[in-house]
Length: 205
Image (cartoon, rainbow, N blue to C red):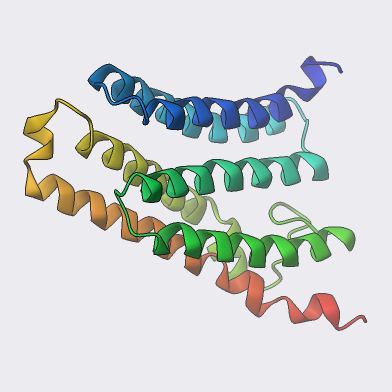
């Protein structure tokens, strides 16, 4: 494989392993392990933006790259939500909602892909202006990413062993849950246009 011509895709895959390392460290109940997990979480989400930048900068955009980017998003996001629920930091309903949303939207998008359409970009399956704004606009994608990464970082921060000052601050816990709910609401809302506009994909049948 030519590394230079597949750099964006390599970053997409590599961030999955970075996220897995961060999640694994959450089961090592030490302050330093959690601080490292916190840093790796930031890196994993920074790589999410980096792969898209490299794809555009190096002219490596492709349908496969689009699928790989979404695949990486799903694996990283669902892994974090599940780990947080298993650790008892959030209710199990959060990962369950994300899993249901992922199967629904990605199932529909797979049909769109078979018809030459993609989730984002010039060949986006979204045909309405509001659908394109919610699903593909830079504003919505960045807002969702920010809410999600802040929710994950804060969940790690408020549960870090040995950080009694943070752990004993009710306001920080409230702020954390605000971002958790914001992230899950974004998750659901961004699925609505995909579902609403999906009938056109099956009308041809």
